[in-house]
Length: 639
Ligand code: COA
Ligand code: AMP
Image (cartoon, rainbow, N blue to C red; front, side, top):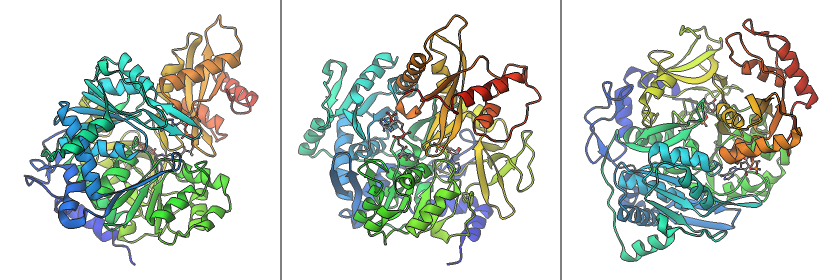
């Protein structure tokens, strides 16, 4: 089919309001919006102002009321526990209403913040939807973060209650969540009124009833027996649906705020037009609900569009083998799979010939979408060869909530260019600017920016930090949103995303702040100063690598010191930081004004061409860095 992309993009460009109004009409509003876009509200305008709606209603009740209650909404498949379960839209609604009743009975109301710290289990999704039902604002914290990160989030959003599981399951180990939560609450300034704990069979947590712990499953059972019904609370289109914290350049994470109206309109539009799935079909985003991909494409978008979504509690390899993705695709007739390139690199490393693929019937699969990090052409070509379906790289961020650039399968695929996530989606007018804000010629590298206003579904601000939002995203290039990605656009309008312009790195599809890791390393009493950079890694894309300058009088076994520092980062940020590579250097290379030359260090570590920075204070230090890297065989693994 000839792609309709250009026509559709043009129709958006000519009349954005008509475009988004048509998309909004596919959803239910309890009060119609006054205007599609109000440029005078919020930081850059607000979508569907004056409208009232409820996201949970549009995800569940709307489909039940349309007679689709018996269709499958949620498939839970957990190779780490052996559990498999399906929930129809009716059943999902019952579960969500019961949790909403529990929350409501404990005083949770519209606007209250609820932190959710749970692994990939159905109750996590039900809890998110229960919050949406009440108009409460959820903030999901990824299970791989440690107590300090959890405490930071509880404090920042001033959580009224927390919903937590007793444990998560990583291959070969049980991760006790409850002690992490208790520790976080002890550390936090804000003390949540209640903690609802879901006891899992693999590890029961002792409950501190005197601190407000509640056994969630028991409370839910009581509500089910009572048959409590909890109607959806109408919220303003512009009211927050959730806060999702993401790494910034410092240890203080940024609370990305998503609204209700714009979010549901944009996500619903993407399912048919970008992913090309129809209601009733199975869509699987193999990610985690702790990340934006999980929020948008495990929970909200598939349910808004009336699809069945898969909650997979496992890994691409080792649970039990590199064929586990294909087993799930075949068992549930998944039509579209979405994951991070790193997952495919892991599978390819274990099964280079794709032998596991042959064991399953994948005839239903129509496309594979990749995002979260740059998709290297080798991985794409391998996936195309073994799966025999289009493999589509698309680019987005926690901030945007949905794809900025993609090859829209639903509108008809455009020709593929390896290394490019294809073309801007309607809603995004992408430009590339030099550091002084001037547009660069096609094919020239620069800062990728999106002309304001951002489309519906994108962040509206940072939680309680409008000034930080403006400073971080809007001020540098007036009239534009700064993506903090560098890249270019070619003559055909294809976008190429090459690197971040800040200190964020992408490790195994997880977004990490090297600045946050530096802050933790600097806490160690033996460390005078340090720099953390991301160095290229075959499997994870990038891994963090710490360069430490020790205090003058420190003279001790470096292995023991490395272990302490690695453990410190693991304890403070969490295992997800994957911080295992550390080396000691005499000095750090700096500019004459004292700025550490992290970019040059990274190029040296990656074996890339580099130029001596004109502003360098002492060029000899770069030779010292190269030498230490060589001595360490690129990296010193602290095991
Ligand atoms: N809870 C607790 N710990 C977690 C966790 C969670 N939810 N997720 C990861 N961790 C831990 C891991 O167990 C690991 O711990 P270890 O150092 O003790 O081994 C550490 O955090 C680093 O995890 P990761 O970087 O993910 O490496 P891995 O070796 O466990 O797995 C991959 C490697 C490639 C298989 C895995 O990263 C993967 O599936 N990535 C896809 C990521 C993704 O879906 N991203 C979302 C964007 S679409
Ligand atoms: P996150 O907020 O975790 O989704 O990470 C967003 C960042 O990941 C982006 O700013 C990019 O740097 C990177 N990223 C995501 N998708 C892609 C992609 N398809 N190609 C290149 N980089 C990507």
